[in-house]
Structures are given as C-alpha cells and as structure tokens.
Length: 367
Image (tube, rainbow, N blue to C red; front, side, top):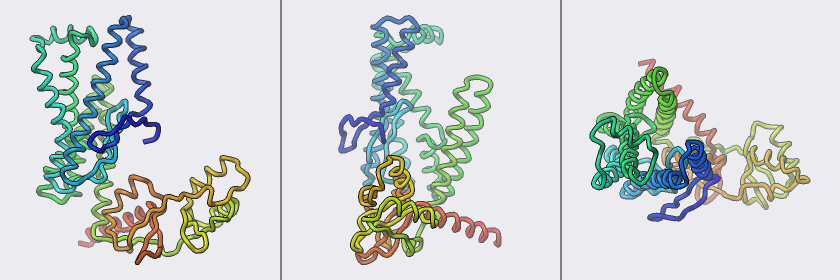
C-alpha cells in the first residue's frame, strides 16, 4: 500500500505501517494534553495504542498463518489507524478452510484476553469498572484495558456480517449446504439486516453505530458482487474473453502520437512494440500523467509500463479474476505457444460478467 513503511518480515510476510498511524499518535498526545494529563499519563496512553496495534498485527497473523496451512500465501500485512489489512493471494473456497481461516483472527484476541485475565482483577461492580476506566490508561489499569480491547475486538469481528470475520464464518457454515455464491447472498442479507439495526440504534444512542451500519451495508454488497462474478466466470477460460484486435504503438513514437490515437479511437490501452516485439503497455492514465509532467514530447519507451503480465489462453478465468481485479491490471497479454495472440483487461472481464448475468437472469425468467 502506498505511503507505508516496512517494519520487517514475520514468517516471510512483509509487515507495513501506514504513515497515517503517526496522525493517531499525535492526536492521542494532543487529547491527553487538552485533558490535562501529565507526561507519564500521556506515555501510558501512547503505549496502550501501540499495544493495541500489536494485537491487531497478531490478529492478522492468525489469519495469515492459518491460510498458509492451506497453501494460501499472504502478500503483506499493513497496519492502519482503523485496524489491520492482510492481503491474501486468494480466499479459501472450501467451507472448512474458510471457517478456520476466518476464526483464526478472533481466536488470537480471545487467547490474549484469557492470558491477560490471569494477571488482573476484574472490577466487582459496574460502578467500580466505570471509575477505573474514567481515569484514563495508567499503570494500574493498563492490562484491564488491554483485556477489554481484546474482548471487544473478538466480539466485533465475530458479528455475522461482511466484511468482518463473522460474515465469512457464517458464509462458510452456509456453504456446507449451499453453493458458495448462494451462501454469500444469504450471509450478506443477514449482515445487512443487522446493519439496518445498527443504523436505527445509532439515531437514538451512539452515532458511531450508524458508521458501522453503513460500513457493513457496503461491505456486504461488495462481497456479494465479487462472489457472484467469480461464480459467473466458473469453467470459462481466458480464450473466451480475450481481445484479438488490439491497438499497437511503436516504442519510438512520441507522446503526441499516443494522444492522437487516444482521441481518435475507443482504445484506452495500447500494446507497445519495438521491432515487432512486445516491450510494454501504455494506458490512458499513463498518457495523462506524462502530459502533466510537461516534458517536451517524450518517446513512448520512456513513459510505458515495462511490467508485462502474461496469461496462457487456457487459464481458467476464475483463477485470474482475483489477481487482475485486486491489482487493477489495465492490460494483460494473452499467449498461445509462447506467442502473443490477444489482450485482456479488467473492463473486458466486467463486460463479460455483465453479459453472463443478463443471460442467466433471462434463462431463469423463461423457466
């Protein structure tokens, strides 16, 4: 993720922290100063925030290490002010695998809470608890706060709604009986029903619940659409959607020629060649970026994308959809017997999905 600092690697997984994390630390220091806390109190607050993010890291590592057991690699883990993000190469599709991978994160929090519980004394009454918490984080209540945060993280993540772990747990349980895309729809509808409850409660109590409700609403919709797309692509190959007619441009041509081609056709991406050999790709965004730099008519070779991605014509679409969609690849080269025979991009796949969706609905309507 852009704007992230690499902290190192754990079990071969790159660990990053986003620069916005520093804003959170500054905010905590400012709020402590405004409240009138001394330097020691502020230090405890900062240490507590850092411990929470260690907890979030361990939560994401729980997912990653469980996924690794099923030969699913994790690209990296990024720590953000709103939590952690573990980027898996793919999501587990077998119900039992998804169930265990989804459960692994919250189980880390439960384990941390149980371990912390051995070293703390829990308040006997709600009033006592309220007094302890109202004093802010300090040496006396640090581990109590840590215990409560882990309990809260586990419960929050187990809410049966996407994109939380609980939504994936629910989908995995439903997938033992239904097809994956059907299980996703059911789990998403349940989650959206809960989200509606959060939103309504938010109007009468805590407005933060409205934000959670909207987050769940959108997350459920995105998950449903994504899973439906994968289902519609099932059993189709790259050869079914590749574009055999594509625009080429010579690496020695100038930016001016690329602009003319862009304006004179529907093409938004180009294959760059040199001496009849493919050497790169060029898309609309890269052309606009080059124009914004105000360089004097550079050649295509200096602005093209040299990172070429090749796919065999017989590759299953469902296996590459995740890679193309997540990485927003604008143009992929399709080969047969090591020869380029066409191209493929995200827009083309989405158009194919749209056509299949309409045809599927039409088939159901006729029955």
